[in-house]
Image (cartoon, rainbow, N blue to C red; front, side, top):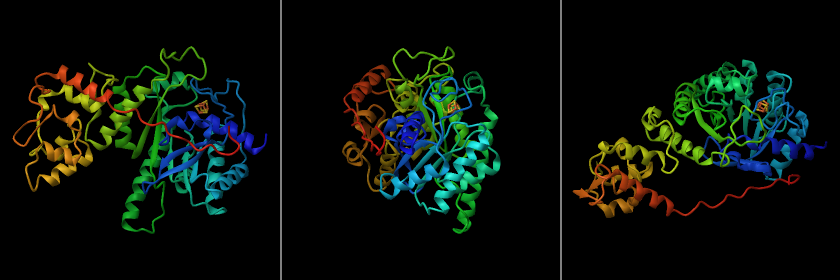
Length: 411
Ligand code: SF4
């Protein structure tokens, strides 16, 4: 196989990894997107070093017992390919993952060599996102953080029981060990660099992880509690949720009646956003009586409907954290409300100018001395408010499909 044939095989094999901003949508294009530490969206060559896996995870296209075309790049082949695309401005960086060759350390050592040669010999200044293979030795994990912008160790499944059932060669400690090491070092290095800009960088775009949704029976509540714990303890920048796509048949796996659970994945991303940016906790969003997110309504609106006692919120008095809990008010509009009301009482027209989505917020607020929606308030008629919110959601235009660059040599 020549290098471009290998690229076709190994970019195709990488497409089910959702750990970047464009999720699994890179398809066979070979390009995905991610965010650099300074907030730029960068296009990355998304590829595996190898798909010749010695493990046999039930859900994976590249599992050892599956019959697929196999390929492995040499370090030099992959370095040459990246530099060719980079110099032609096809890509701004590399997203490198791999199947497990004979051992985690053998695989990790080759991946680290690719990044080291790019950085030192080729003076490659592009972005590198590198997967860390669970079970790799601490020295290799350390080196990965030194040469990559972002690192990630896949948590894979939401519980250790599901991991041992579906990915028996992986174990939770081999995943959490490197993740914890990376989180600790990232935290230390951030503190060092606050003291001195000369302190060496270590994974400046942070670490992330990926979880498969729907291949195992855990509830959304369990998933969000796990994500919350990972954000709190592992210094994680992002958890990526990947709807389970059946690519191999195995009687340990469910057969989704209506395709991959994409709507569930979407709601988990929205709930995750509330955990990271809106001050919600996982236990507030879901409890044992309602352990799954509402697929029809976004998690903030669903929470608001379950908590009518919290409303109406007085726009002219509520503090920032309270404003953020109102459907239709986001981070930007909550900040604008705080600054605008220093000068005058806000009324409905003022809220519209600020950018509050009144068709959602109106059932939950009072402003300018009165309620906005006199006939229907959430504390009195939550079921009517739900229906109206659903109507408002359905009136939104569908998002435009994104287009991906297809690299030469890839169909
Ligand atoms: S380790 Fe498991 S998930 Fe990763 S490539 Fe091998 S079989 Fe697939």
